[in-house]
Image (cartoon, rainbow, N blue to C red):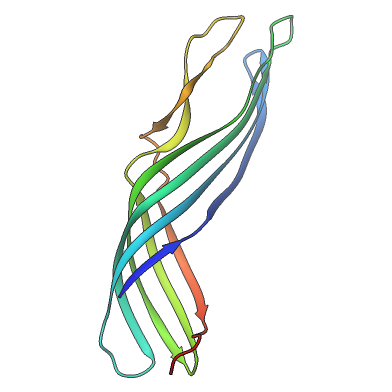
Length: 165
């Protein structure tokens, strides 16, 4: 079975506040992916309603990383703040294992997948450090290949056939 599919994955918001040596900071970031995948799936020939399968999908993951960062130094030193988002795309593989269970005209699906991305999350390229300006953001977006946004997904679904016999 071949399948073309797309999705939306939101990894939530991460926040942190604290103090360092002579400054306070606050941090908030979010990360999302939109996978667009073409997959091939092999359904094992079984009798009855239980239909196990394995599969592999290949596709592109559109990624967005948004960050709000503020450091306050006091004593006349200018605050540093960053409020921006960075986008990148990555090719990824998604191996899967799961099953369909047929209940009359309703199909239940349970699956586990591993979303493996070949490149890292989108980040800004930081440049020079001075007291006047802590960093500058270049016009280009880089990827942090040391931190990949690969993940395990558990899928639970219900399908209702439309038309046909």
